[in-house]
Image 1 (spheres, rainbow, N blue to C red):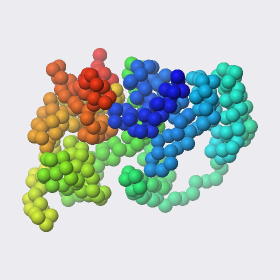
Image 2 (tube, rainbow, N blue to C red):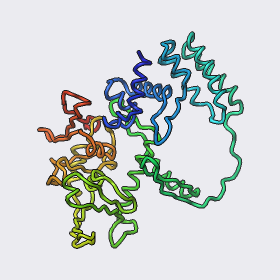
Image 3 (cartoon, rainbow, N blue to C red):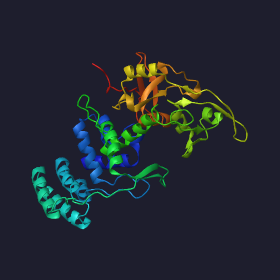
Image 4 (cartoon, one colour):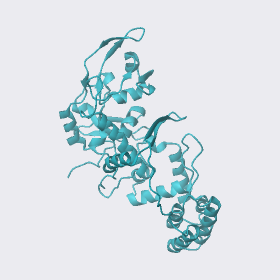
Length: 383
């Protein structure tokens, strides 16, 4: 039964279901929906990801870490802690070891697991590591080379955007020292730890780093203003939920992405002529005041989406009744959301409203919860 459930979870993960249900990781989904401990959720997620192919990101699915272990688990021959002992060993084998040697070592551990417990498997795993990598990690005695910094903006075949960089030692150290504090796991609340992987934490940290840096008054400006980006779209498309917008330096984006960018930004209305020339540029206006941001901080304490522990500095204000639908910029029409859940609210059937007691609550789509029971975030509640 465990093996069948793991296969279902792997399918859920590969199809992106956890994303549309508001979970950043598979462990977070298991923790929230299975009502288990944080430790059990992380262990279960590790098994699923090690035994089954990972999601295909613009190419072939990522092969599993332990395919032979997965076969034995599907037979019902091994489970839980035995699997954990095997995948811990396999994860420590250097990438330089040929795959056939890794599979041969895995086969030994699987056969042992059919008649032994996790302690014996771990002991055999240490012996296997000594055989496959007797010298351990190779020492690095060479001096670091001088590197000419390079940075490329990349657009992948699947439409996603990215960066490729080579940095000199000083720039690398400065950037990492800035990101390290922002990428630390969030403080555990009621025994619940941060479920994001290290890569996801640094990704979130870099996203917020760019946003915070570009809104700083101390950075060089453009045309007398702080650094900004320009999004252009027709008024009809914005109001009617149709069409697309043009993001300066990037290209075409959806109307949904344009509305997300407009939620907590300076909005500069403009009127374009039939040839696309600017006829009138209105006065820029910040949609959420500093006083309102303080009030939202006191009320929401961070991202208000159920189960999210993202703190206030990593969140922006979202209009519950969208601005294009004449939603007002007032506290009972605003809610703090992190980047991930801000996009989810705009792009899915999740609904948010302010309850009678003045706190936000979220209603999941019918395909996730047919009862339509509202959910709240209890991660930020103060004693």
